[in-house]
Every structure is written in structure tokens, then in C-alpha cells.
Image (cartoon, rainbow, N blue to C red):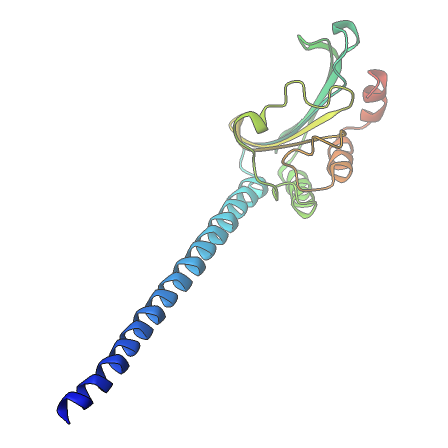
Length: 203
């Protein structure tokens, strides 16, 4: 009789043990998946928050910059321009050639309240939203040879905190996750008569 009971209890115990191990494994796997996803999301949010904080800062060493490069053509026909805005200055420089020979330069003053309004407008236009690419994917040399390349940088003491780029070529979207037209218009509007100077170099 005891032998019969043991023979029935053993399979039941074995099933219970297997079930317990399976449940424990499932719980561990679920925790691992959700923990990694949560950590990844937190890191992404943290990066965005740090970029936004850098963008919205109005301390004297902060600045934002837009650089636009034209099509890759002969040196005599190559053009680009750059607009840099700081809490105390606004600068536009247009260039010709790959050695950046200056065509025109406009340097104007600025003030903290004006800069604050400007960077908040850039923030609302999602300038800091994208994630920087790495390695070859972040190398813009030769990118969009028949169109234009746009770089938007958040700077501290002239060093990049975050730089995002995009282009007018369909196959070279880049890292910018925002409307390039909206951001370009915001930068250009900071310099009176900027459009005429930019049109002068054909961009």
C-alpha cells in the first residue's frame, strides 16, 4: 500500500517541481526584458533632457549654430554659410570654396532675453530631439553631393554638446528629428537681410 502511494506521489511532486522552475524562469525573463527596456528608455530620456538643458541655458558661454553646405561641385562654385547665435552676439558668414573664403560677414549684438526667446523657440521646434549618430554614419563628407546638408549644433565654450544633421537628399536623412525648414527659418530670422546674402551665394 505504501509503495502504491509513493508511486503516485512521486510523479505529482515531479510535475510541481517542473512547474515551479518554469514559473521562476518566466518571472526572471519577464523582469530582465522589462528592466532592460526601462533602462534604455530612461537613458534616452536622460540624454534628451541633458540636451534640452544645454539648449535652454543662457549663460555667457552658450551658443547655437547652423551650418549649411551646398552641392559638391568645383571649388570656384562651392558655397556654404554659418549662423551662430550667443547671448551677446549674432553672426552670419557666407563662404565660397572648400577653404571657406569669406564672401560676406554680418556681426550684430544680442541680449539674454532675446537669446532666451530664441532658444526656447528652437526647443519647441525639437532641435534637441534627435540622437547623434556614431562612426561612419555621422561622417557628412560627400553626403548629398547634389543637394544641401544642414548641421545644427548646441555649443558650450565653442565645443559641441550635441550636433545633429540632415540633408535634402532622400537617402541621407541624418540624425535630425525635426523640421529643417522651421529651424532654418528661425536662424535666418535672427539676422536682418540674411536672405539676400544667402541668395547671393546661391543657397
